[in-house]
Length: 421
Image (cartoon, rainbow, N blue to C red; front, side, top):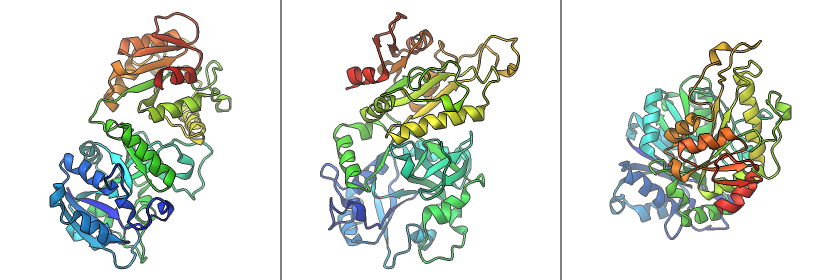
């Protein structure tokens, strides 16, 4: 499979860091970001690379040459006239494999590409987007998908979006079929997102691949310096899903949002003071932040799956406004007790996912390659502590009771301040 890396941008927003070299040549710890990308690809067997260059492209070509020195095979397409960020794909179509990787050259990443490609093939679409939550979803393109991860809608920054939405952002990494270039675009400059990908939303031909792995653009000086710090702290490589992850599992009600009994009205969801700040610190620490919550309101017939999704979207939106995000949400819709008016009998079962059983934690561990012994379970009740202990996690109780927890604290913020820093 060939990898196309788009390296033709001018990088005007980050010109204060380096204005005399193309943005992909800006260094992270004495090495161009594009070299970091190529090393990540080479280590996983992706050695055939085509780089599209434009502004100051000769600097890139002189540095990397044919790629032999870096253990890869590199060819180039030089844009003499600006074609937009996808125009060059039509010029090199005959050089592409049936499916190919398409990456931006101005992002720092370390991901399991083979896992990503396998996911693309298993879903059978013509486009698969690498998606993740980020700390600024309000000014990012947000992807809306169904339960099978088929993309239903693509909300660009300029598009009107609902009041509450899932923090799922397109990260700029793609697996594409060459069929995506069979369309005719009557424009001199072709935009990848708006002209080729966004029209696929709702067709069943495009999927999103949700991952907590490290992908961060360096479009502004602040983000660039943040990437440099993450690299020095070892966070970038550690987040590759080939490596064991560590997580903070979070109960929802009473831990993140204020406890109001069974939460059935979206208007009653309010974040606990300091919760967003605490989750932001979890994000920065290298731990995954994963919600595991019992939601018997589904089995009780008081909330639909769609209404629960809206409640979680509100939680993610409120967190995102404060620069925090959740890597995954797992919920149990079941309840074992039967015989109540309005209940949904199909969910009235004795399941393996309802806390105090550890099912949700074990599922997340499988999805994200989590080392449970290096992880924490944080909650405000006995069920949370017992689930965490059964899964092999260290446990934190928010409260004063004794359930055999590792530690007791007064809030999620206190846990993060005392034990993650």
